Length: 195
View (cartoon, rainbow, N blue to C red):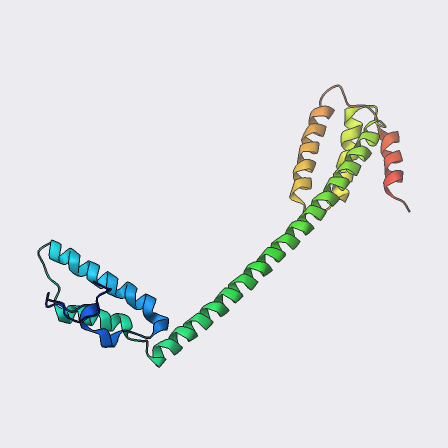
């Protein structure tokens, strides 16, 4: 059907062979041919089903396909695209900023964790050294009580530890572990007070 250019169609319906004057210039020939072929395929399918497509419906379809967008619509589309590009740029910048902030927080947290691990290791080592200096558990507990009383009273972990140490000290003093540690208490006070 597309190859015939005689203009005599015989079917009475609008088609490419009936309008040779509407054929576009050479640059748009391919898209025009594709549209015309699609139109012919639709008409053929409808004819096989026993229905027919009116000529006005075909012309309306072609008019909708061929009508260019208005200048206002094109400007609106361009503004929308520009707005979308700007929003995407802002979104990417925000994502980069959040990522860099989280990376910085992780780095600070890792450094703080490393510092706390070193403090814990040194405290464990100091505790092991001090543990060897005490002959009995009650002397050790009294020393720990004094050290904890000198620490920050607002620290909840230290407060719980002090309470546990006092309970252990009371239990130890009520048993046979209690010994006279006055000489150790005086030695430890002199170690704690550098002045």
